[in-house]
Amino acid sequence: MTVTQAEIDKVVAESKRVLIGNHHSGISAWDGKLYECTYPSPTSYPFQWFWDSAFISIALLHVDPALAKREITCLLQGVQPDGFMPHMLLWEKSSYLHWLEDEYSIRLAHPFYTGTTQPPVVARAIERIYDATKDLAFLRETLEPTLRIFRWLKAVRDPDDDGLVCVIQPDETGLDASPKYDLAMGISHERPEEVLPQLTRSMHRLFKAYEGIGLQREPLLDVFNFEDVMFNAIYADGLRALARLCRIAGFPEGEAYECEQRYRRVRDALVAKCWDEEAGAFWDLSGLRTETPQKVLTFSIFFPIILPDLDRKIVRTLVERHLLNEKEFWLPYPIPTVAATEPSFDPAWKTNTTWRGPTWVNVNWYLYWGLRAHGRSDVASELAERTVRMMASSGIREFYDPLTGEGQGARDFGWSTLVLDLIAAERGSV
Picture: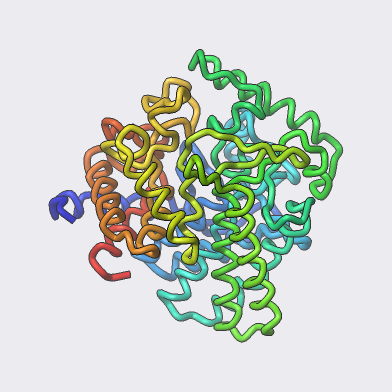
């Protein structure tokens, strides 16, 4: 890295402060469950989130590996008997009822958890924790509930059995207001101030459609059915990790074999169904029956790069044609969530919604490791350097303006501390 040591030290110190400061523990009114976790933001997001906790646990490896393990074991208390994993666990719900009342996107399935899920980053997190600690007891304890999560996704969220799982509302990808969902959600981006009201109305429309419908049947309604590239890349990567970890943990070979075969099927389906050779991009597919490609240039087009055996020709096309394109994604502080050439590009957050332009550290983290896996350490190192410089200037924020590096959204945001992992990797200590 060519960033200064002072910049690195500042980012490391701030990240550690946030991780410790966002830590919460107690006994929940939910069956007297003991919880110990790190909130994404104590003021903006005062609960435990599925993919946030997975990211946060990886950052915690650079602070206290024991805390990293407890983050995951606490999270997995939310896994239901059938394998459904909520996107939010409301450990201290009574303390934050006002927060829930103001949030358009919360749909409860139970007083203490939501009726939606999120990308299963947890398998990658468990793999990283095991590799760092070699704790077989932790691995065996966490593998069984995690395998149930992945079985539920296959059984419930792949109704057409094509290998790709679907989401039934935008929040399930974590990319709430991404413009790649605008067409399906009936949102026009011509007037930035109208995006959030339109999104709110459309979310309420979805909630109305799902009333009285069990979680098992929701995908079949096809009122919002997306085979999302990012979600499926994370799902595939998780299957890859689980196949490896099952063998390490001494689980029956059939478990590892099943995960391995499903990984290959998802990977191949992403290429066969979502890859557009002419555009040089992976497109999300909208509609259970129509599977219409949503040709919007967002960072999702790159996400299959996280799969280590993705065709190198595809990787080269993605990197050279789009990622390093200074008119699209290679902005001063990459990687923007939307290409600068898209009409919906909103780097200054004028829409007051998320994932419409700003840079997020979790995206940079995933793609950093994907680039390294495919021999592009040069690009990965430059991405890490710009990320550290941005955060040294603007602090630990939820997201950042890709043109100026200005911090936006929540302060002291948990998963932005993934920068610790980038710094450690660049120093050769991961």
